[in-house]
Amino acid sequence: MRAFSLLATLAASATAALAATVQYDFSVDWVQANPDGDYDRTFIGINGEWPPPPIKCNIHDRVIVNVTNNLGNEPTAIHFHGLFMNGTNAMDGPVGVTQCPVPAGNNIIYNFTVDQPGTYWYHSHYSGQYPDGFRAPFIVYDPEEPFAGQYDEDTYLSVSDYYHQSIPWLTANKFLTLTNPTGAEPIPDAALFNDSQNIKFKVEPNKTYKIRIVNMGALVSQYIWFEDHDFKIVEVDGIYVEPTDASMIYITVAQRYTILLTTKNSTDKNFPMIASFDTTMVDTVPDSLVWNVTGWLTYDENADFPEPAVIDQYDFYDDFNLVPVEKELPYEPDYQVSVSVSMDNLGNGVNYAFFNDISYVAPNVPALYTVMSSGNLSTDATVYGTNTHTYVLGYQEVVEIVLNNLDSGTHPFHLHGHTFQVVERSEASPDDNTFLSYDSANPGTVNQYPMRRDTVYVRPQGYFVLRFKTDNPGVWFFHCHIEWHLEQGLALVLVEAPLEIQSRQVIPEDHYAACKAGGYAYEGNAAGNTVNLLDLTGEKLQPKPLPAGFTARGIVAMVFSCISAFVGMGFITWYGLSDLKTTELEVAEALGEPLDDSDESK
Image 1 (cartoon, helix red, strand yellow):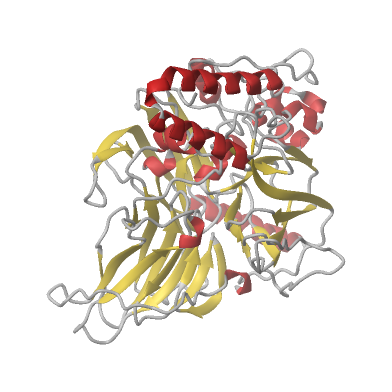
Image 2 (tube, rainbow, N blue to C red; image 1 turned 180 degrees about the vertical axis):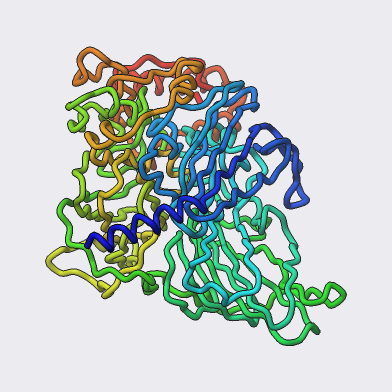
């Protein structure tokens, strides 16, 4: 045993000696661009350029990202999606969870070691910023990957939906408004490959390409295929899988797939590669929307670039059946988190998203900062606030997350700080009136070696069961990665082994400095109370429920009746406005809240 320990120590020392420090200096600023050729707009770029650069490193490298916020009018923050941040929870990046926003004109340093190989991405985790351009791949190279030597070139391909208007503008004017009581998500204007269109992906004959595919979009999953070319799936979300033949993948927002694609022997023809929206995820498909984006595997730039062939159906490989290279039997759970997803309207008439009727609202103090300033009370979920929907987890246990989807849409869910086993996932409900819920006494299909990843989708009115080990003390976000749904509150917080966090980790001074510069609270409970941590007076809460008798359908009827009245009876505009104000006063009185005349939705 001593000999083995000595060898392990020597191996670890050798690995550390080979590791490098990779530094990126990011000035976050506004950049003009026109990726689809139809609309020129501002994006959030890096160092005066858009798209932002990918981050690249080798496994075991130390990565330092020095971020200066030069946006002028917005705070920001960066999340490194899929990286565990083991021992450095403060570097994870979601605002309100592990840090304060970085105010304009201020600086913050992310400093962490990467001990995971594979394909990841980084993106802003503040107020819908990443669909406005603040995102790019994060590639971790591994010389000892199981398929080393089986390919000739290592490259990446991003896919995303794209909006002509900014996310804050769409949220304030089209989405979270009284005039959108059904919660219909804004429809993208286009699809992009590598933040562009009509790309020519140059290839040579009889070679194998390792292509890392990342969906960096805000809303829709996409089907991706390469015409007349099959491929092998070899990695998902940083987990190596047994090489699996496929001709098409279905990739949700935030997921990653790595494939090995071997080209043909001749160069006489170019082949379309296509990404196509899952149009079931938008409420309507306007005639103007082109929901496919086409590029080409380019063997010969002088040859034709053909239009893609029409297909009858999307025949994609179901990721549930992938088998990890490092096989593990299904974990036996010690603790269960059971949640149901729903969408509904609250008292302000706006449509929100819920886990167990709780819509996430960020606290005054980031949850990690509450851990670090609450002593033994850090094990009491109360201190993290009502609407953070926090679960406190033990150390070195197996947690099972059961999620029942009461909504009619597909949702991709991401867990920070971990990968999980996907133990079960139901099919979609056969009709609108049936809900498929998990029944532990009558379990569904469980694979011998469950697939592992960090982002997985639940089907409409279906369910899934996930299991993970609490071996990474930290405060971790679990949320829908459709950015609109996160804005609606579809999230919860897992505080994992808080006493271990206190004893092992520190928050850097420059992170505290960002809080102070922005005037953000950085100690105490969710309300910022440092005297009585169980007193949540002043905490942020979700709006109150609708008064009895009000429904989403009623809101729609009221809004559009008023609109019709304004159009059809312009000569009594004053009367119509007075009547609408009276209705709103009645609602406000029922809620016990004053009516805010500054709200432009009124």
